[in-house]
Length: 177
Ligand code: QAP
Ligand code: CO
Image 1 (cartoon, rainbow, N blue to C red):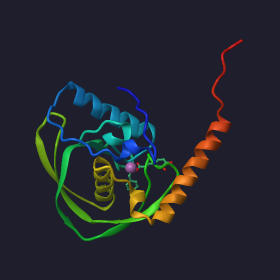
Image 2 (image 1 turned 30 degrees about the vertical axis):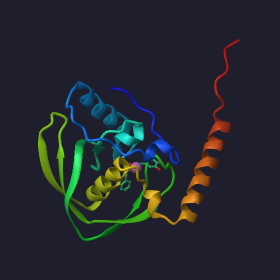
Image 3 (image 1 turned 135 degrees about the vertical axis):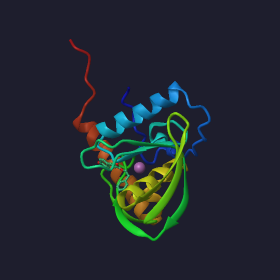
């Protein structure tokens, strides 16, 4: 298992459209483990492979309170959706920024497991929001894309400023004398 670096908005690599997974091998199993490890370390409830610069249709979720219900979706497809709901969303690729987004309330999803077997499941509430948010990543889309261009530009500036400050507060260690 390995902790992987998360790409941050406005990194153009987050715009890559992921490819369908066709090979269900050891490398895919390792990718899923790395996604879990990185999601838990960073206190996320969902993570898409795109966010760690792997452009394959793989995402993981764990919306449980106790952080003990990991779920992986490979080649996910929404085959039915109903209603609408609004959640305040965040994203590990857009740290410290939150905004309301409207999405379907209930979705039926078809996907594959790491061993290639297929399953279908119905999700609602936060689970449904999270899966739709992570599927957007696989299409190169971010939740800030639902905001006005003006607000999106404010987000870009706030992140640039936060990164500038983080750099000044954490100087790179210098070589020991
Ligand atoms: C997507 O996002 C999501 O800014 C998953 O400083 C989020 O796990 C779907 C996070 C909310 C529905 C509702 C964000 C952690 C985690 C941050 C995440 C941060 C630390 C985001
Ligand atoms: Co995200």
